[in-house]
Image 1: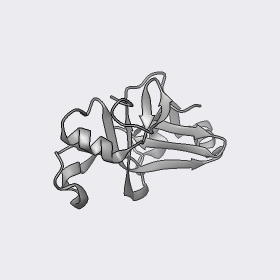
Image 2: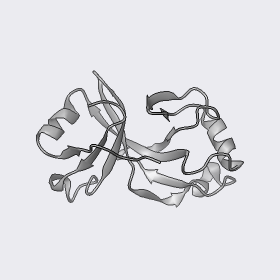
Image 3: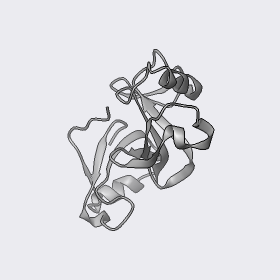
Length: 146
């Protein structure tokens, strides 16, 4: 397992938050893993959040059940969004969110450049590996985020 991996829930996770979910693992190290559900749109757009009501409509994703009070984002535009952490293949985690919002509002960033998540999925050390071993997740050979 490594950052940049895509995993899909199996039928063992039916009737849970993760039913029919595809996740992108954005961070993976000895302390655990962090990922986002990439195939579940949040029911409201970015501009429907009070703090961003003056922004353009932009699709949000329900990234996971942890920390639903914060936004997280991944992107592939380090030329526009500084300070992101390289995950894999020109995909970055986070960075200067004010710059991201400015470029989104100026329409120099699109849904092909960035995904914004409400919440995330997190696992402690070896927890995700145990869930994969028990058959809750399948590692995908390929996946597309954008």
